[in-house]
Image 1 (cartoon, rainbow, N blue to C red):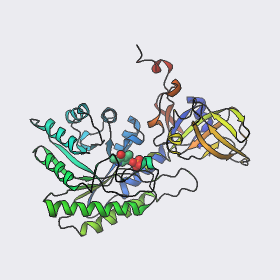
Image 2 (image 1 turned 135 degrees about the horizontal axis):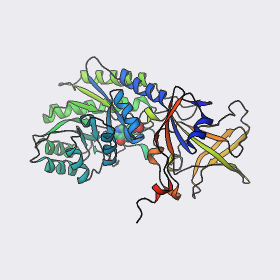
Image 3 (image 1 turned 90 degrees about the vertical axis):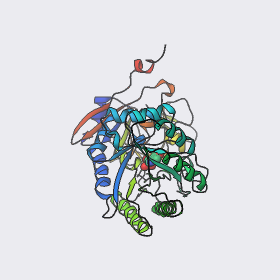
Image 4 (image 1 turned 45 degrees about the vertical axis):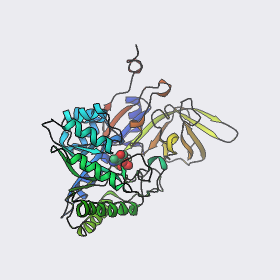
Length: 418
Ligand SMILES: *Cc1c(COP(=O)(O)O)cnc(C)c1O
């Protein structure tokens, strides 16, 4: 790989400096378009919401809007960013297990279309806030369906003691929560939501989630007289990080989900009208590349380190949950991979390792080291550890590049300090 979006890696590094996050805009568009065109059904209304926490900035939110997607947000900051990008608040879904009173006020004031309620106490607070309000808000209730998703523990969300949603094992609490919402005429209870985890390869896990969600929708209707209009299945679809990763392609995954939903819906006394999915990672991960300049090379008795000019401050995933990445050296694509390297960042933590072990051609100081599939949960989880400014973010397509987030300056770094 010599170029990203038709712009040479050398040019990107010279123009914007390193470390640099680059998105291939053509790949972003392919993914968005694949979801928009494949998640369709003849019998169900459908919708795809981009889970903006994977990578949230005005540029990507504008792209999601261009392809007709809705948007997931999980905080006031993400709502603020979406509104600043001109996203229609009616198409925004507000998630989160601990939405603060201020965040709920902000969501109501800005006409956010749907609030995905997480628990009974939140439902009570929302009902209080909506009393005397002339506005109407739609709600979904987050359910924990108890589905084993075979992913890292930190990114699984539907094990029995997960902090998210209300477990199906606590049915009384679910009913009480829905009744609390329904007490207010201006709160529409529209249906149920679940999100079982992230980086899930196993389509059966989604099949199981669909089975449980539709069965529960039927139960709410037939046993409790609560009609369910919408079933929101969340996100979690895997992206390819390594050569051996083969996630189900987006169109195939969409067809599978739709056909399973249609099948299950047939069994219901009162069919569900609408299904939603919320992909984040699978839209942005593979489009992203982090370009670093190699610094010193260090041999220890057991390892050969190559140091990057960034690290856990711009990509904490390897340190946080042993995420694996592939990489290459720009301009050395044709050379034989003869040396086993550990790619370490520059932060003062032994755990600041970007790649634990990778075979690459011999690296010289000054080489451009490129990590692949860094587009999801990289920049969005970045920190100021060691007071390293955040990298710049660039979109590249058809031989042209444009900056979408500026590199932070040292003045920015201390700008809040008194
Ligand atoms: C994180 C999250 C998503 C997106 O997950 P991905 O693995 O990035 O697709 C979707 N829905 C909810 C509620 C989430 O918290």
